[in-house]
Each structure stands twice: as structure tokens, then as C-alpha cells.
Image (cartoon, rainbow, N blue to C red; front, side, top):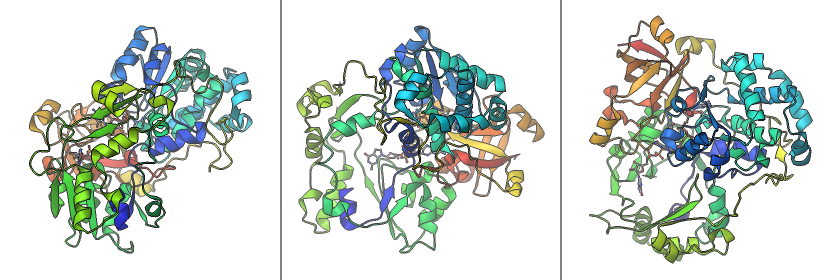
Length: 559
Ligand SMILES: Nc1nc2c(c(=O)[nH]1)N[C@H]1C(S)=C(S)[C@@H](COP(=O)(O)OP(=O)(O)OC[C@H]3O[C@@H](n4cnc5c(=O)[nH]c(N)nc54)[C@H](O)[C@@H]3O)O[C@H]1N2
Ligand SMILES: Nc1nc2c(c(=O)[nH]1)N[C@H]1C(S)=C(S)[C@@H](COP(=O)(O)OP(=O)(O)OC[C@H]3O[C@@H](n4cnc5c(=O)[nH]c(N)nc54)[C@H](O)[C@@H]3O)O[C@H]1N2
Ligand SMILES: [Mo]
């Protein structure tokens, strides 16, 4: 990053993952660090809201199972019957992108049944009267219309949640890839304050833990020097890469693209527009990679990158409280270089002399750990080399909001915020024109369901693809019947942006009007040369400038 700042390159808004979710939770709580993963074993009612830990958060799942064996009821709220939804007590399957309405509907019932914790609300929250008024419009019947759920389900979920203790809601990022993704997180994050769930150990919201590392590691030593940080350079949003590479309006246009740690030809929405951009003869494309990915195929230069076996690194976490050191097991093979070594070599070739361009990886690791913060007490470069990884030195019982202590400007939980538009989370669906809705009536989810892929990583490894098996598009029996589709038929799934060929799996994993296909497959390895993101759009979310990737509409034909 220092190297790119030094040469004055455009900045990248790296918002494809987490920013929308975080923005929503921050609006309500001012911080995302709620309940810690291990502490969910104390919960008696757990809602896994738009997250699929059996596949995507495997280190959390054993704790959820422990909670279950301790007597907890486990609920999943997900428009798709994920691997997790198949294993829990209660799967609630709303239409995609309707969680804001569902959360407000639960609040409606909680107020109506007088199940709120008035004392907690009075002491530690802002705007309850506005919220009460606002949720009047979200009665169970209205919310049933929006979400496709039964009104009874909404009432029953609200009562079970509010009457269980400790009650935990686990969110990660799943529902952020919708146009109103941040509003959904903002609304869901209000529930534990409304019911006072934060008062109990194991009750509240579980989201991210990265703030613990943000507070304790020595970031100052490795951030940009002030002179560079204050430079005025434009930002390009990574969601809009295709648009940025092909736009005639961008001035100056993009002449060179440097890709590392990412495979946008597979993972970024509007795949065909990205490929069109990558095909430009006048674009200099440089990729640092382990493999010739579908992005690297378009590169003018490919540089071999080291793997985790060959480089020093320090690993903080999104979801755990452990800090780990990565020590190279072997010397870099062949000509492979760590990302930072590649930038140092480029800086040298370019004749730059600033010392900040030349810090070694091990120095960066050591400096990051130089901190007097109490969370890092007993954690040093030497101790990490011995242990490999250590838990942050956190207080015995982590109960962040037992007595309020929110990190908002008022130090209270914000049901209402005069500085955010709208002032209360509001269900605002995307409006489609009628002609498009007729042409592309099915809502497409493109999900990280493959068991052995990590996003697009490993998507080129034969034995992994073999274990993964054939990719299927899930379609509801009624949607299949009206299209004369039988199980196992070859299908073309298409919209304005592209088409993907995949085999039909007729199932109740999706509700009527929703279809689902796996994300992660490389387009070059699928029939027709397109994969899931050929159908998604580079539309941005309501807050946080993330991507509304799961907002795609498609039609399906038998081929
Ligand atoms: N095995 C494996 N593990 C991974 C990854 C991987 O690729 N493979 N990727 C890693 C990454 S980068 C991340 S960010 C995490 C993500 O982990 P999660 O937060 O679990 O997110 P996703 O897997 O994207 O989606 C989780 C669920 O959200 C649901 N969902 C989609 N739209 C909505 C909606 O509008 N409302 C609701 N309620 N639910 C919705 C989907 O159907 C899906 O089942 O996983 C990480 N772990
Ligand atoms: N349709 C759809 N699209 C999605 C999602 C979805 O659910 N649906 N999920 C989104 C999410 S949450 C995320 S996080 C993104 C992830 O998208 P990406 O960030 O593009 O993640 P990967 O596909 O894992 O690509 C990482 C690449 O970096 C390479 N790599 C690994 N280590 C190194 C290294 O040390 N140096 C260098 N130079 N390269 C290295 C790997 O070989 C791999 O090719 O995808 C997003 N895209
Ligand atoms: Mo992600």
C-alpha cells in the first residue's frame, strides 16, 4: 500500500466484504465487538441470521453445537436452506433482502406484547418513541406480505426470542449483499437492546472482533507516512471494477491495473464487463499470483507469489480473539516473492530512496506487535514464535453492553439517529421496471456453498473440484414445472449481463421465485465460459459502499 501511495496510484475502496454489514451495526451500536465466539455456549436461544457457519465459519460451529447440547434452540434466518439451516431446530426462510422488514416486524410484536426491557431502554438507548411509532407500519400481516413468511411465524419468532434468556443473534455478512443490506444490520442490531439481552452473559449480538486487534496492535508504525496519507488521489470502488475499466467518462482513464490477493474475474460482480475491461489492448495488467487464475490469463505480466509456507506474516482476525504468527517453513521456491518484496524490488528499480518503502516483512511483523496495550500483555514476537498463536489478554467475562457503554456519539444504542438518512432503518426495496421483471422474474442468489473452495481459491485444483462434484442451480418445483424443467436438465440461466449453463436441481432449498447457484467456480472451467458473477450487477448498497451482489434477477430456460 505504501508503494502504491508513493507512486500516486488511485486508491481502491475495498468494500466487497464486510463494510456494509459493519456500517449498519456501527449506526446502532457504535462498535461491532459484541459477544465473543466461545461465549455463545451460555446462550439458550441463538438466531444465526444470514450466516452459514457449517460451511463458512467452521471454528464457530462446535460452540453452537455445545450451546445446543446445553439446551439452546438454534434458529436460522436465511432465504436459502444452507448446510447450517439443514442442521438446526428452526429454519425461517424469508425472501432475499427483506430482513429490515422482518426485524422491524419482530420489534412491532415485542412492543405489542410488552416484552421489551423498559429499564434497559430508558437507561441505555436513544429514540424509543420514534421507533415505536415507526414499527406501527410493520405489523405481522404487512411483514408477512413483504417477507413471504406466515404472520404466525413472525409473532412466534418475536416471542420466542424476547422470552428466552440468554438470547443471542449471530450475524456475519450474508445479508449485506442486498441493496438495503446495511439497514438490515442496523435494524437487527437493535433487537438485543430492545429486549435487554445484553444484560446476560451469552446474550446480545455476535458480529466481528477485529476492533480488538485494531485497538491493541501498533498500527501507527505501519500506516502511511502523513505526507502520503494526505495526498489527494481518487478512489475506485472494487465492486465497480468492470465499469471503471470500460468507462469512457472516467478521466483520466485507467491505463494500468495491478492485481494481488484477488481474482476479480471470478469474484467481482458483472463478470463480462470485467473481462471486457481486462481484454483492452491498451491496459497494462500485472498480476501477482500462485496460479494462472482467470484474472491472470489476461495479464501482460504475471509474478509468482509466495504462499503461507514461504513468508512471515501476522494474522489478526475478524471472528476470533486469537493472534497468530506465520513463520515460513521453507525458503521461497523458484522466483516467487512475497507481495511486499515485489513492491520493494519495484521501488528499487524505479529509483526511489525513501526508507518507508524498504521495511522488511519481519520488521513489519515485529513493529506491529510493539504495543503496551493490555490485550497484548504477555504476547510478543518471541512468545508467538513459541506458541504459534495466543488469545488476546481480554477481561474474564466479556459483556460489552451490560450497562450500555455503546460507542456511538451519545454512548447509547441508537434506535433513531438524526444524522443518518433515513433516521430509522426502513425497508426500501429496489424498484425494477415492469418489463425487466417480466423478462427476468427469478431472484438469483450466488452463494459460497461449495465445501472445499475458499471464494475462488482452489477452483482450479482437480481433486478438489472432483470432491466438490458438479455445480447445480437450485430451483423450486413450481418454478421448474412452469418451465418444463426436470431434475438433471441442462439449463441456461440468463439476464441482461450474461448467461451461465448449469444443471437443474429441483428442491425446496429455495422458495418460489428464488434460485441459487454456487459462487467460486472459474468461468474458464465451466461450459460457456461464464460463472455466477456473469449474472450479478455492480450495484452499490445503501451504506458502506459494498456490492448488492445478491440482488440479481434472471430467467431460466432448458437447453
Ligand atoms: N468454506 C468457505 N468458508 C468461507 C468462505 C468460502 O468461500 N468458503 N468465504 C469466507 C468469506 S470471504 C466470508 S465473508 C465468510 C462469509 O460467511 P457468511 O456471513 O456466512 O456469508 P455467506 O456465506 O456469504 O452467506 C451466508 C448466508 O446468507 C444468506 N443470505 C443471502 N442473502 C440474504 C438475505 O437477504 N437475508 C438473509 N437473512 N440471508 C441472506 C445466504 O443464503 C447464505 O446461506 O465466509 C468465509 N468462510
Ligand atoms: N457472486 C458472489 N460474489 C462474491 C461473493 C458471493 O457470496 N457471491 N462473496 C464476496 C466475498 S465475501 C469476498 S471476500 C470476495 C473474495 O474475492 P477475492 O478477494 O478475489 O478472493 P479469492 O477468490 O480467494 O482470491 C484470492 C486470490 O489471491 C491469491 N493469493 C492468496 N495468497 C496470496 C498472496 O500472499 N499473494 C498474492 N499475490 N496472491 C495471493 C489466491 O491464489 C487467489 O487467487 O468475493 C466476493 N464475491
Ligand atoms: Mo468475504
